[in-house]
Length: 98
Image (cartoon, rainbow, N blue to C red):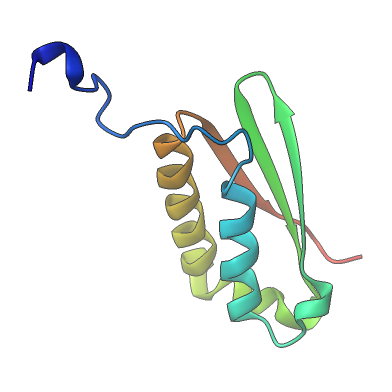
């Protein structure tokens, strides 16, 4: 293999224009909650950063946030890793139920 054949990036960028970041957050949230019909993930882009807002039922907020915010923080870490693999930056906010 010649040096020009190797990728200079540690993680190759995803060639799809579709983002899998939103799907990852939905998948994790759906596996945590009791009422999956109330899970909604909104995606906003500002600059080079993607902001995701997670809405769940009031009864499921504790399951998604976790004790001391551990589950929400773990979701944020996974989200940032997935975004970095796509060459993006991302942030997750868990929205207050209405």
